[in-house]
Length: 449
Image (cartoon, rainbow, N blue to C red; front, side):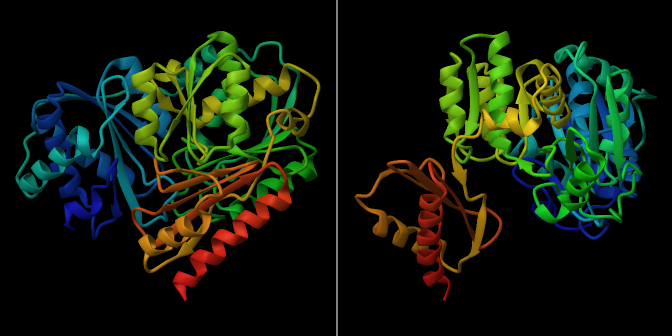
């Protein structure tokens, strides 16, 4: 067993198997989970990694040792686990390491109704209690029932987005050998969609490419397939299929900010005047479009815990992040890449324009994308940027440093886990964005020398 403090992160558990995360550890976490949450029943699911089923079985043993009954959903995506937690009214645990390499695994935990468990809402206590329990013998007390929830999950998503009557669409989906290969066929069944599958074989070794659509290199096969097959669009899911990246008919990426604006408009049409959450590095076009459609935009720090907290606090109908996580009030305020994909399909299929034309309506600015710089002294780099931009714009330090000037803005923030500074810049014209981006990078670069 490794150091539990190392594998328990701010919002989940993540570590190398078996060096940092093994079956005795998962067993202890199962027992601790029940003790700390007081759960009488728990629902569990897992992804396709070779270690996922054994680890989830160990967790089940630990949970049952404390008298809890377990609903074991078997293979599923993370949003299927959220569906299970919400629809069954049970706390839940998903075994996955998302887009991490094959040697990793982890756990995402939630209370009943898919309410997330993080460091300040029980995860630290679970970690500390599990550390005390590792190695203790377990005697199962509660029952375990296997329950296939895939059809219920697919049916539920289709009740949230009406795809009846859309025109036929040809869609390439790259599952990256992850859980999208399991859930997409079920969700798309009976819809007027010609599915072109890429890498649907469940394989936790990820033999074709990493299941991380945020890395451009992992989208190349999908982009090529969309163009060569004459598809209407492409979708790429990460390993646990809770994130979705969209490719238009020309093989070009559609920014998550554009998807956020598109879905926000659709949700506001159903609930006029509702609140929409966006983090501070989404395009400024997002709050503009939300206001134009009668909604109330609320800006948050980067990170799903902040988005989910604001969703719950404000009762927001929808929330979107630059990382292609999308959150829905009608889905227990949880994130679902599949639900976002269905909104895109509906928006496209309800009219005759191409996706590039539809997306163009929601694309207003030129963005740099996130650029990482290795910096030995993050504080000094931020200080120099503040100094250089003093008097040139408004300063905001909600999350790192945001500077907003006439027709441009940038955010520079430190990574919580690596010696990196992350830059996002945007402007009304590309030359201005490039100039601002390069100026900030030059200042940061001097600290790295």
